[in-house]
View 1 (tube, rainbow, N blue to C red):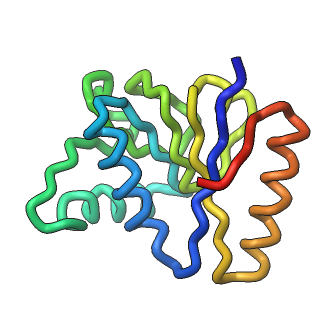
View 2: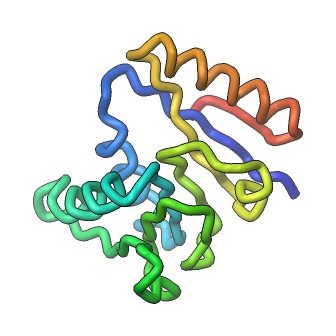
Length: 139
């Protein structure tokens, strides 16, 4: 079965906040989540931000740098296409291949409307998802 792809509209450059909110939402439902980021720098930054993004919130997570075992972690941040915690939900801080996306039930992508180039890239990804048979919708 093909995963469902949902787009989150970003009107401001607040992707990190949305990554945390979505991960928290799914974690509170008992779901495992994988978040992809571009590189080590983004991974470490998001890892730190997750501990402080909301006062009083606790979102157990790990940054998969290849040296830690993430199997038991409910939320994992990674910069390569590896589902190290067996997540069924993928939140794409960076676009992933269709083959990798097919491992999940739900994939979250972002429509970055605050920037014309990023917004256009989002529209192109949306069209490609539909062509590839993914059910794509706005969240």
